[in-house]
Image 1 (spheres, rainbow, N blue to C red):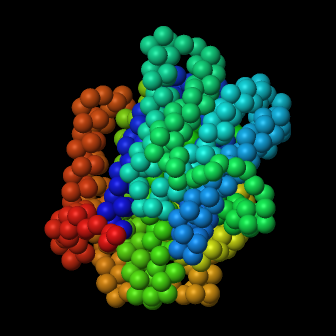
Image 2: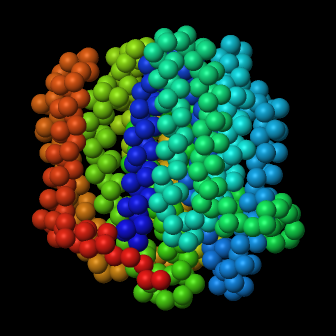
Image 3: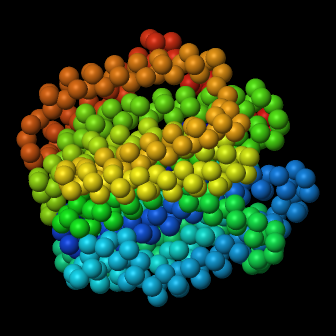
Length: 512
């Protein structure tokens, strides 16, 4: 499991780093004013749908169903079932894109009510409509990724999203060199998103087309039952994005708040992607095999290692982002139209938003226990409750503390989601944690706290200049690398794990 987790997290890390480069150029091109608010609101809508489909969402229903059919009826039946899923999902997302395009003014008004009555609303609608062709490609991309994941072929699905960011960065670099006006630059970037989706689909189709054949759309009882499980699972797997949409709804009434929250969330998505996406991708097939085997030891092993990985990566990332929020934001985003005031507001929002990271990762670790039992409704209800909590808290705190209060409301929603899953799981099937996990988890927390203290003490040595430069960036990168190395040493000193254990885990392959 660790080997597969490392493969997925490495691909996600590469994609997120390219995403930072992309967002750094967006900040330089658009700044944090009305043009940026409109583009980012539209982009957030597409991102939610993309992640609703792609980042572990469809795994929740397709992987258990495909494995069950393959084991019961054979590979040919599973391939035919996958062909019906691929055709049905493709037809559904095309129809949905057409409907959303026609209703786009209402959609944007719903997710950004503060835009109503301003020119920002129409510009956001124009951007969102140009981005919609991406959805036609996102459906088949998602199905092929889920099928490859079900077979344990994680490398291609992990690295294919790189094409999305490569295409956008290439176009934005040209726009930056040409010093394009922000309005025209935003429209060109919006149109490029559909091209990026086509590139990703082409790459996967070369390797995954034979996994789903023959291709046809079907809405028979079997397919309706599958979709009845898939849709709740996709919504539940995209909980972090729904919470950000809830925050954006409140933030749209305050100038620049949408942009500050967006850029703060982009930093949060690096560790969330490395841990959370990998957790959802790898753990669902792992848990499905364990649950279908009926072996208590296998279930306990999968759940215990998932919690250890989640805590081991989420806790140091949380403390690191909180301590170094200011220097990181300045290094990545304080360019061109993005001012020092924007950096300060974004960093403050990031501190509060980062409190949601352990909860998001915990949800990613707990949800597969429900998905493996073909229960997608429980995570769905927990997510819907979390959205309500986030909206209420963000509304109250946002009026007092601005963007930082909205970020704190989002964090409260995330913890509501995690606690709801813990209570429901304990009441229905009980989470199984082995003795090794009970020994390691407190020590992981201790190692993360020790690293956080060291970073806090060393942060004062960073260059204090408000202008980022080579020296400031290099100093920050050295500090991050030193903090990571110190954390590894603390893990070894506290008896959690060592380099030799990690190397042995990477070398292990799943038996055929």
